[in-house]
Amino acid sequence: MNKNEELAIMKGVAMCHKPFLKPEEAKVYCNLEHTQLNKKLKEFGVYKTLSGYYKREELDAMMAGQPVPLSMRLTIK
Image 1 (cartoon, rainbow, N blue to C red):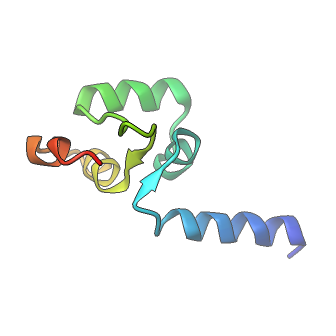
Image 2 (image 1 turned 60 degrees about the vertical axis):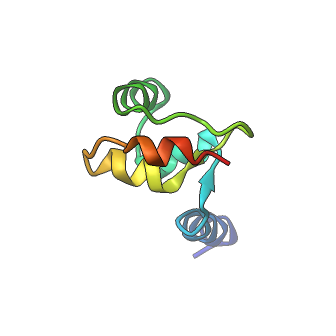
């Protein structure tokens, strides 16, 4: 593997352990394009935090097809 591939793999592994993801990271994490991701986020009621990040727990619930519980949405930090 070359250095660029190693760096991409390390970023991917680190992204899976972060509790909050930037919008670009959320696209990669969910394996969706921008429009598809926005449609799913709206459908499942997943919103950014005040600092502009998505909670990984909510993204996991969305990808599993579970609606995001209201209690999860009210604990935005």
